[in-house]
Image: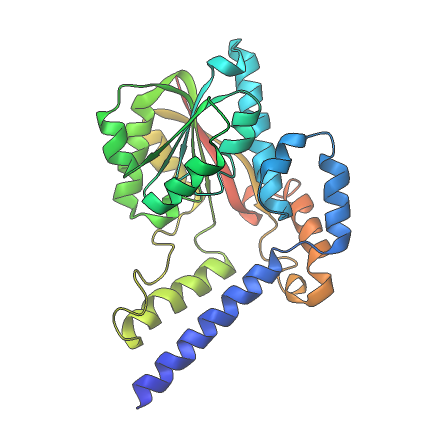
Length: 288
């Protein structure tokens, strides 16, 4: 009886937390207007199926990084080959890159996700979507890439698997190519809450089968761990930016109409803060 009550409480708490998280990342009308002004000269961002400001910021930042690399080595976009690991059905990064003329290969482990992705990208000839485990696919592949993206992917894997994937990616990079990673601070307030509730308590009290894998984020990354993983692959590590000002306006962003503008300021402020005060990091490794 007590175990059932505790399990019910935990499930309700998790549901409530994710509802707050959804609202926390939603644009208010002020930040929405500012976002439109900032990105009105970048139509490729219109292909991102979200009005979430931080997501648009991530896409724009990544494309700027790839453009910088392309111009540095003197490549045309059509000759720049990019791999998007964990591309998802919405092709958040793949579609803007494809629309700009880059050649893109997207890989996702879920077949239904890939079916939807193929449907949404059917009008483009410079994109290919594959279903399967990225490690298994890349081990058998002899293609090389100018840039590889693994965004909000590695935290869903055990560290040994993330490291193995990174090692294979490093082998598939062309000389001078980049491996870009976005992952959350594994010890931020939101990640810590999710880990405690979604893993330990669920594993202890909730009947097996209600949650497929407990917490969806399996590995808790720190910048030190990311640097270790990337340098162990023989790549030159670089921290690029954090997208959130972690632990600052966290509470304000949970309140109704205030959520949009504080979140906008949160993201804007992150670029001026030392990296240990930021979250959702973009880091990279470059092949010598």
